Image (cartoon, rainbow, N blue to C red; front, side, top):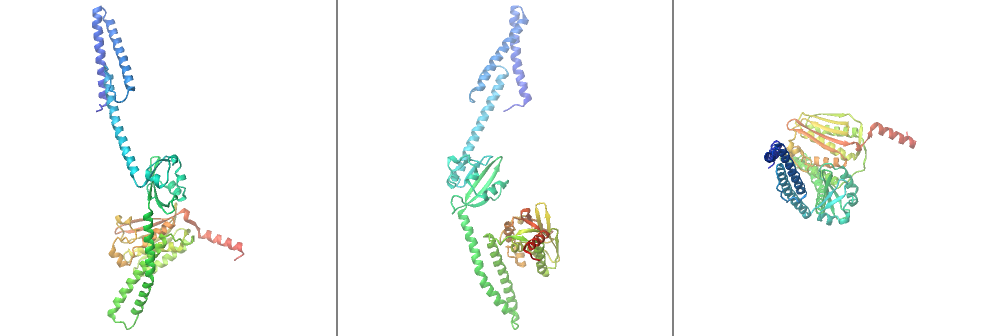
Length: 454
């Protein structure tokens, strides 16, 4: 146990002072015997210092000795100091041995992992890897010290690696060693070094593709029978001589077939988005698109009686697919209409911000509890399944929104308080902004002028 500094100083002082006093007294007694007390005291002091020099020499030799060597017998405070150093060195050695044992266990665990683990130095060079990495990536001992970008020469990985500052979901790549494999790469920062984890997700990729194909095929096959059923139901329900007791039944069947048709259409849309079927990218006239969204929202709003206003504070446009953008933004607006009690207020805005342009939909509806917000964009996730059935929701709208925004490099932020309302914000980055309507009109006129058109 270490003593407090003042107490240590006190012990050292009295340990040396006792020895000094002892040899001075011995010298004085010898001086009395020879008739000179002064010379006796001086002789005692000299002998004390000689002993101190001898003790310091022993102490110096002991310090250079192996750690397990116990301190030699010394007088005064040197014995106390040497004992303290010996105990500290012994404790430090035990701690170091425990740390080394722990490091060995960690290395053994990493070597036993089925997933590839690669340690990278501050210059992004290979420093260490486990056996799984050696097998999966065909690494050799001479690869140590090589740049990670020489090992994984894929542009998508380079972009992900250089932009990663915090832990995230990683990036999935087609293997650069084996085209039939898919790998998930995740980078974790610790200090100036990085840990690269690589998982073989080939089976998961195949299962996901099977699921996508199954959903797409089933949804496509359901469209024809649904269309036939809807047609006959509408034909029968429109007959003037139909028995009134059957009228309600036909009405409910028509309602449910329309709902099923909406689910099928949404599944097909989601399937196209998941398979990254991207329409031709163009500069979308956002003020015009949002005006159309506003008009469609007014038609949808007839049964709700909400007050809806549109604020176009920016004339900036977005590069992307007009059809997909219209679907995503209209989804957000119709959700606000559906989940706001009748006679509510809904605000739609398009504004320029420092990071790009922001599309915002705000309402004073029922709101969403915080524990549900992170899962809202999952397919078929319901905050209140009973209310969703009443409103006719498919549970796929926000999943479609998520995929559309992902294709357009946009981010969705949801702010909501139960009983007060919700705000959905979509940020389109500066890289997606393609100019104002005035600039587009000027460019169009210049093009016409070059072609000799009026």
